[in-house]
Image 1 (spheres, rainbow, N blue to C red):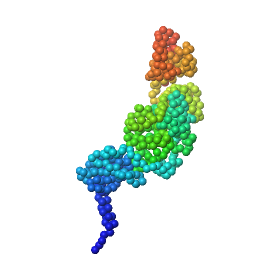
Image 2: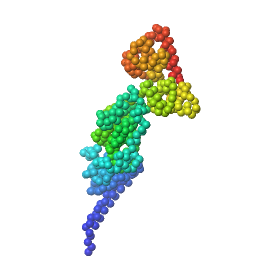
Image 3: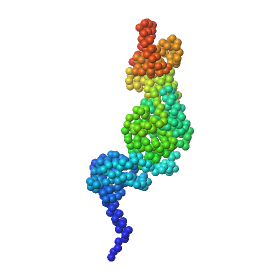
Image 4: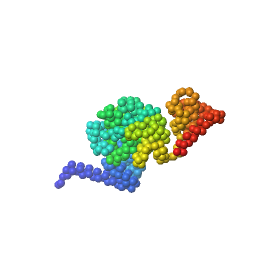
Length: 494
């Protein structure tokens, strides 16, 4: 008589049960594979394992809370039909969410196919405690590192020393310097810098990071463009390293995220960034963001993120005024060892008004052209290169250029035109500058007044009426207007 070992019987039973639930899930995967793309199948379904089958309830193991939420949001209908096809109309599905360490995250989160479990939290805390001294996976280049080894990805050439301050950026620069002096310890957290392309957002963001590293070398600073952050996130999900990705960003002291507007309509990216943002902010870590518009105008962003963007300071960068453009060019000339005459520098500054990157690019192009052709840099060569560099050769006249032409005509310094003096000749020149700015540009009365020494719109309107009256009654004054108009037209047709 052969007696079976109880342990052997138990093992055989377990093997049979295991084979049964795996067989059911394999049949489910065959159906799912025919209804999704190969890439989606590989990303979302291949990592799933069947855990057990109890009656008509199949439990599957998913690698993270994120994968669970993604399945429930995007594949709930497909899963419902598939399970019922294998287990009958009463078939049900439960999830067991695992940590990256392959240990269970407590009790399985149960979700029945007929409808979601309303008690399930959207973002439960499923991450393990962070050990900053242990090695973790780095979503950048190095496969493993410690906190002190993280490369900040900063450009040392973008510093406060070569960031020219002007009315266009004074608030943002001052706030950035305050943050660099006390990261995480000011009310400017987060610091959000916004403005159009080419106005220095990235330069200022790097400058803050460079300054922090110089003053606090022990702090971990990271600069990352938003598109790179998104690519890292996608790779983390594909490689089942979601927790490592989050841990990496949560261990930072200063996070500088460039062009956050690219997160628009990227719901899952916003979810993970929301989690990272909260952790850093709650631990007094500094967050610096840049985008191309103020938070109120950011479309496609979750309100919970927008509200956090407004917690700190939003500082804008505007187009640099004439004096600032001159200073930028002279700083670039000094750094590159270039010498140009004042009239050439002023012509460049008057021709390119809205983009610092284009302003510096035009300067380099002129120097390169001169060097290649072995010709001296003259005003004629400058005009030729500017026409090629600026696509639109029929330039819209700027207020700065109009003021320059008027001041040159009356032989007055530009500073005097913008001053508060009431001398007759200065007032007359100022009124003419306002008049031509109103008739030849699309600027508002308030904007024109701001460029003319901080005058209000009523003063600009009065100046235009005065000039129109004098044109009709004063022959000499009418000749002034005609001559100035001709000088301005030279630039418009250049």
